[in-house]
Length: 261
Ligand code: NAD
Image (tube, rainbow, N blue to C red; front, side, top):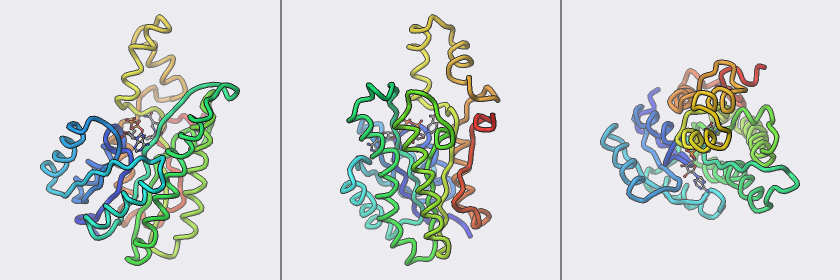
């Protein structure tokens, strides 16, 4: 079976890993709904490029993944544009780093909502369609932090562990419907988000670029190399294939050995 003319909703896909998912699926002929924040002209350029590079249809939803009503509207837009949703990728995510005792309560609520609960709301909206058509793929970007912890990232680690638990539960509920549910857990991925931290960290710690990369960013990643967004996206494409039909409820690490240590 080919993925051509299937449709995917990909949250948080205006940059980084999400955009790589959109481009990798579009390269397989999948029509895509992209979502996320950014400058309207940049988002429109990426949307148009998906169509011109791959000959698929691409639509944009500005839904805020912190808002259940907007998540439902995003899925409705996918359905009204493409007729159905075959693939859901829960990818939107944010981070905040602070000790628990001073962790801002609004940041905790926001991270739990965007990084974890949004996946529940999106699954809730797409599952009836997937059940009715007898095929579906649900993939979430978890993190090495769905398997292990780091200090000062309480909300992120909690949300990502929760996302991995939700993945397993949904996989069991949907096991007999030809719908697979999995998560991918990257280590440090080279995205603009990570790249932009380097100059500030160099200044703050008086380090060279190499020292920041090796002694701060890649300290826990045994290969001492970043994961690329394209490597993460290639796992998602595989999970959408027939070859992966028996992979469900899995949490697939792509972390350069981080969680093996
Ligand atoms: P990124 O900042 O480049 O992308 C995040 C995307 O989410 C953007 O499109 C942004 O606009 C969108 N977004 C943020 N808040 C949103 C909201 N409320 N509603 C809708 N969209 C929203 O970051 P990234 O590195 O590509 O991260 C993508 C996912 O991968 C996240 O879930 C992140 O936790 C996870 N992840 C990243 C890394 C890494 O090292 N970069 C490692 C492991 C997991």
